[in-house]
Length: 450
Ligand SMILES: Cc1cc2nc3c(=O)[nH]c(=O)nc-3n(C[C@H](O)[C@H](O)[C@H](O)COP(=O)(O)OP(=O)(O)OC[C@H]3O[C@@H](n4cnc5c(N)ncnc54)[C@H](O)[C@@H]3O)c2cc1C
Image 1: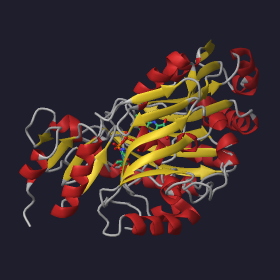
Image 2: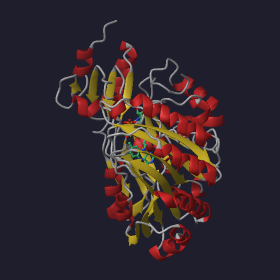
Image 3: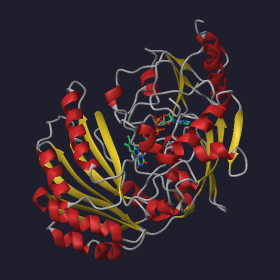
Image 4: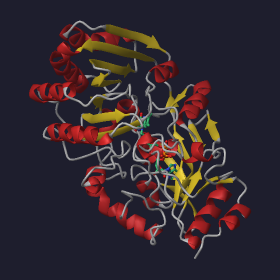
């Protein structure tokens, strides 16, 4: 059957865009330029929930693949396919109830807008550090933030969601109603079970905050890694550090970026072993109000194309792994992308690990570190050598970590992704998928049940 695109256009209020139309690329392109050659046949810029439902119904009847797109930040480009992309960004309502801290957001809200809406009410949610990231994509895949050791994952603060399912039904999902879908939407991953029209979160009073940014030259790396990993392990859950070593433009630097939900004086004391491990090039430790701290921690990226591998670790990387990682970074293929390549350890644990691994679809509840390896390149540069280099780096780090991987840092090259992302929760996710999307309308590489 030839799809009747005109019919879809006729019955939807938002514009249906085709290649060459003004906003077509901006509404469908993946943030990661590794996928720059992917483009759908058309993009529906949904004007509201009714458009989303019509699009789902039409795609089901026409046999056209459909994917929802929020912020477009999927590392694997999972929000762009060859059929119909539904751009959700007009579902941008944010309704904050200051009395209860309940926050209802549209399925296309971006986290930068949500931070801005919470600020006047003195409320906080763990929303991560990418202003252009979509709240649905973030929450559905877990959602880790510098505040997560204290406030939990974004998914842990989700109290309810409204889902447009494959049969174009609108289901309210929470702890009482459609509990299976509510469970799946907390870590099961975006795009798998339907299109989330809205999401309800429980915010809390924003705490006082301080931040740090410490930089060292690479000769200090062994001592700094030893010291900072120990601090990460023993610090209170109010403290969250990201320890990294990265090479860019021929220069390698070690960094510690972090948040403490308390005064800078406490953070400085906690960091004393790190500061003693080597004289930093730069050491900014300062009190900030909560939202300034969130802005300070925003991830700055040059964009371009990139690939990321992740693992979870319960123990610090031993000195021999750190030494081997430094050797690999020194031998990394040069790239014109200022993001370069590197290794980062994000503090895990605290409130994240107080949730039972089976209580939500998000299973990784016993790690102390999320370990992330990355490489980047510019359009036109050959990715093959860099991906080989990343695979070698991964082989090295895998020996010191668990088999898990972080779904939101989606890795399209990951073998064994079912177990790595979902562990023992995968069979239950497949059963829920079969119940609510038996014909597999919502399908993409690495979708549940594929
Ligand atoms: C610069 C940058 C910073 C980041 N920072 C963090 C961070 O601090 N913490 C963290 O945990 N992750 C972070 N991420 C990863 C991010 O959480 C994931 O990539 C997330 O899935 C992106 O969501 P999105 O809506 O922007 O992307 P999209 O590509 O639009 O969507 C991601 C997936 O969710 C689906 N989806 C989107 N909206 C909906 C919806 N309403 N209903 C159903 N499915 C939907 C899409 O189909 C796709 O499969 C970051 C990524 C980048 C590029």
